[in-house]
Amino acid sequence: MIDSHGDMETLIKDKFLFSNEKIQGFLDTNPVQRTLREQVEELKLKIQDLENLNRLAQDRIAETDKGASDN
View (spheres, rainbow, N blue to C red):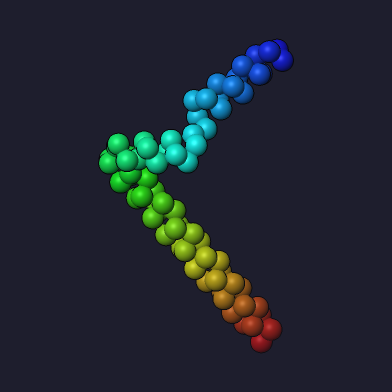
């Protein structure tokens, strides 16, 4: 079992964990992948912004509800 774990770790390092140079080379030779990656990054930032706005709105609602219950 330990040998299998070591083999799996090596496989993951060799096949799935790419260096920055290898990732950049892949992006340079595959423009579709670059476009998709950029779109995912943009969407990720938009999601973070929306989550922050939602958190602020929820906080304001909670403050409003608290103020209304005090009266």
